[in-house]
Image: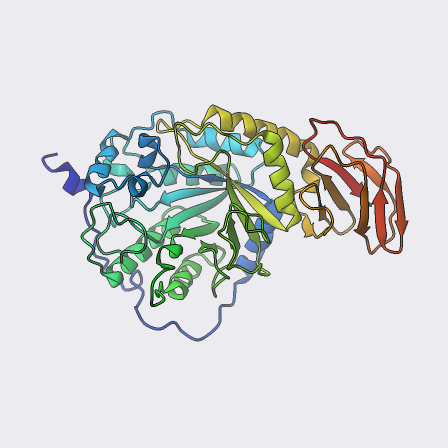
Length: 442
């Protein structure tokens, strides 16, 4: 204990096995062919429609969000002292997963290592991890066990950038955290791949690796080579069914299995992150916060209403995408009460209306705007009316003969006209507190 900071910030362990240290050479030219297991995993993911994002690390102790070190220009050695105060005595992985299942979520995505470099599992690549805290228990292991026992999808977030390690080549963030400015990309690349190997070897089935941080070098005069293809090949070699997604805000790269959109449904760019990304044919996912922050922020009580979140879920599904809804757990391991209330209410709504969300495809309805969106299955179109001010749905293209138009659930028959492949539903009367009035078109 004489030099606790040097213990906490121990450099990466040298990885002897060449299987862990991918060569820093040009990628092979053969194109990525997803395995049958991977294709099945994509289909399962695409049917899930709703997941929970969890931004949790020692940054929660500061109550200023996960970007606190960068935003406040905190020296990384001073920041690291927080690890010796991290004791989330109220953390219960089983209770977390039960709450998420009750909310209707089909998978979680957990931040194993964020930009601050702290690892939430028993990694052997650095001493800066959860085992060297007063808590001293592997968070990732507990979540993996709970997910596997309760049939919950298990996705792992992993940061490509680092505000602490000297071997990470400095990008456009992390300039005020006290790093030396030296870099050693081969060393950092080996470190990342060794950590990914641990996560994909020691924790059973991992359904997805969710990368973030490539945008840290988007202003380089010479494009930065992240060697993504080789890294993706490592993941698929270790677990062929594991999906790879990357929150780079660009078009998808070879080896990626899903496409991610931050704070926007696909096709929109309201948050300013998706302007350079075309919608691919891959399964899609939108991530969004419940309040305004990803990590726990003590002053951010501006939570979106349950109705707003349900409408976001419907709008996301109408684009053929999943909603990954974020929660920032508190430093003691508790989930914020405001988040739990919304989870319970979303779960109640999904138990009644889930058939219009899960396993559906998106359907374009150009004249609906944000007020009317659609999802569909082989035999049913679900019209989601997201504003109680709407009294008529007009000009909806329907290629097959319409057999019935009813309120869902309940089955109340609605007035409609069907002519020349277009459907109009009239005389709607929607309660002011209804978040999503659904019409089932058979």
